[in-house]
Image 1 (tube, rainbow, N blue to C red):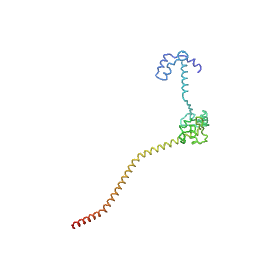
Image 2: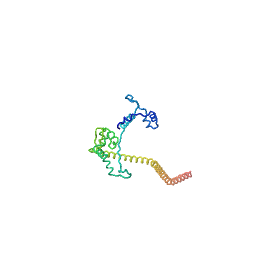
Image 3: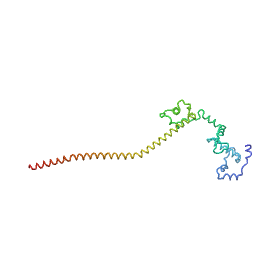
Image 4: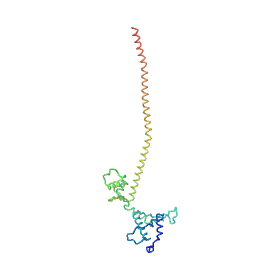
Length: 256
C-alpha cells in the first residue's frame, strides 16, 4: 500500500494496548503482547507497521515449514445452480486453468518416482521369493520384470528410484489390491475352517468313541454266543460221561 508506513507510525494509547493485551480472546491477546526487544538499538515502542511486518514474517516462515496444496475450484454452471452440470462450462474452466495440460504433462514420460525402499515395501509381495542376496535395485527390477515385462516401456530403473508411467503404476496397484483381497479371502476361509474344526472335532470324537464301544459290545456278544453254543454241545457229553462214570462205580461196588 502506498505510504503505508507514513500513515501508521502513530502509536496506540497505552491504556488501550494494556486492555487489549489482557483480552480473554487468545488471538486478540497475542496481538497486543509485549514485543521482544529489537536488535537495532531500541527505536521506541513497536508501531503498527513493525507489528504487521513481524506478523508477515511469521506467516512466511510458517508457510515455508508447511506443505502447501492449491485447490482449483470449478463451478458446475454459470449460475451456480444446484443439480445442474454444464459440460461446456466445466471444460472451458479446465482449459483456462491449464488443468488438462498439467494432466497431459504428468501422464507423459515417468511422472511417478518412488525410492527403491518404498517400492519394495509396497510391492515386494508381487515378486518371487529367494531374492535376499540381490541389491534393492535388482529386487525392484525383478518385480517389475515379472509384473510388467522385462522390456516394458512403462518403467525405468534410476540410480536411487523407480521411474514409472501412470499406466504402469496403476497396474502395480491393481495387482497389489487383488493379491491383498485374495489373501484376505484365504485368511477368512482358514479362520472359518479352524472354527468349524473346533466345533466338529468333539462330535467326531464322541461318534468314534460310540463306534468303538459298539464294536466291543458286538465282539463280546459274539464271544458269549460261541460260549453258549459250546456249552449246549458239551452238556449232553458231560451228562453221558457222568452216567458212565456212575454206572462204572456202581458195578465196581457190587463186585466187591
